[in-house]
Each structure stands twice: as C-alpha cells, then as structure tokens.
Length: 147
Image (tube, rainbow, N blue to C red; front, top):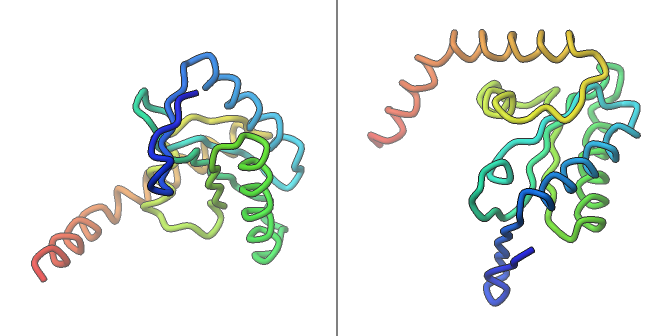
C-alpha cells in the first residue's frame, strides 16, 4: 500500500487489486457478524483505480433497531474497521439517509444481503423516488448556483 500526503494530515492511499479485494472480503465478513445489518454496500472512490482518502460503506439496519442504536453502530463499526485496517472507514446507515445519498450508494458494490429481494426492492424504491424528484433536485441546485 502506498500512502501519500502524510505531511498534510490528509492521507491518500493507493493499493493494488489483490489487496483491495482482501480488504473488501474482510469488511464483508466483519459486517456479516452484525445481525442488525440487513445489507451492506461499498461505494465511493475506493471502488475506482484512483487513490482514495477513505473507504465508504453504507448499511441498511433492521427496522426494529432504534435510531440511537443505529447511530451507535455507525460510529462503533467505523472506528473498529478503521483500527483493524489502518485506513479510515466511513460507515453510514441508510435507513434515515437522504434519497440523493441512497441513490449514489445503490450504484456501488453490494457486499452482502441477508435477503437479496429486500435489497433489490430497496434499490428499486430509491431509484424510482430519486427519478420522481430529480427535476426538483436539479432545479434546486440551479437556484443555489445562481445565488
């Protein structure tokens, strides 16, 4: 693993495909141990061939987990995975995330799903809701840029 930017407190990592697949397998196995996670998706710059700053992971929790417990797991899992990998891991729950965030996430790589149909339903729902509101989102962004 090559590490750049040590002097600026912003580290950039570049790893080969073999090491990347090992990291993906490790994250997948660690998250599978958490029964409260229904599915997990890897997304962001880690999936590209370019250098990256962190590893972005999104998870969908069981509906019966409280918001507080979901927040605790987000932080706990981010810290644990970061410590074990020595690369920052940014983990977020999808249950209460914005439709735009969820839309970007579902374009990523599925790590695992306890029920694949549940994942496909989530992905379809997110895509349909995003497309329904895409015009409004784009208009809102245009308005912001004009300010």
